[in-house]
Image (cartoon, rainbow, N blue to C red):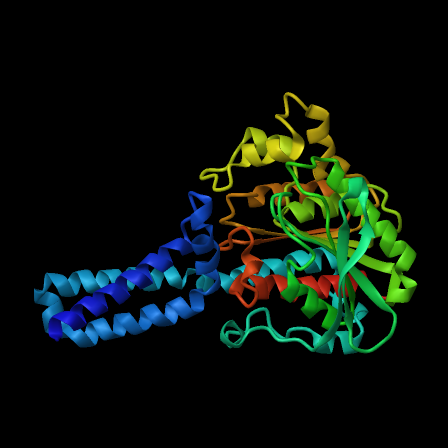
Length: 400
């Protein structure tokens, strides 16, 4: 029985260490991406798990055994290493949050919260991190949802959108939500947790769709987004949407489309853009692939654009939001993960610099431990931080 217990304890130690190493290691291949994305998001739980194992290790062997037993030394080293790795996001959280606070205040002003209605502030998350929400989830009030509303039928391909609205009938600011998926997959049902949450905060969320590569290549997706915006413009009144207060949010490929839509003369003014880890310069992204490269970036871009930058330089230029930068653009919130090897954070930082150089408001937040698609773990530590500032930014940008 003692041998069995030792084996079980050893397996638990290896599980703790095996999960914890993904907090610092980026995924080398796509199939391992869930570990690289998920481990940092559940790191507080992993920290507790590893701390318990470390305490049990000391209790199991005792101080005298540790001095004499090689097994005890190895066990304590493993549990200590796992604990140190799993605690990294929590250790970095306070300085990261301070940097995010400084970034938003330097762009919007220290008094930016005074421009937000008190009733809106009261609905928002009270803290950038609420540990209990990691287990109980992030809850929100019920909302009305209308799904699969057709808005266009280009080339016989039906395109539909979802609308999320507060329960109370009224007139609300709006969010246009564009899903990611390497321009190859996804639907208006993507990002459901966020769309429900933000609708309950007092927004109409229009979750739109577009045709996918490789069957349809850029600029088809741009055209589909504009079709969706035109539909929103024509049906705003009946769907309780205030067209004078609209923002766009996208994730990854969806961010690229959201930025192009907002920066390139949309059918109606878009007052703000939220970019979660979106591609910024597709030419540079092709020429300087990250290491490791879990989604095979060059193949993904060739699928989207039909070839290389040498073959289609103008398409790559048109598809890059960095080339749409000019004065008088909407305020932009750019959130990137420091561990991301699909869209590296340096590109978001460069875009923010370029936007500000043209007199635009641009807030860049880097979450050091976060990987691409960190918000897929909705109650995770990274998304809690991102959500805290996203809802405040949107409320400020769309204030009356």
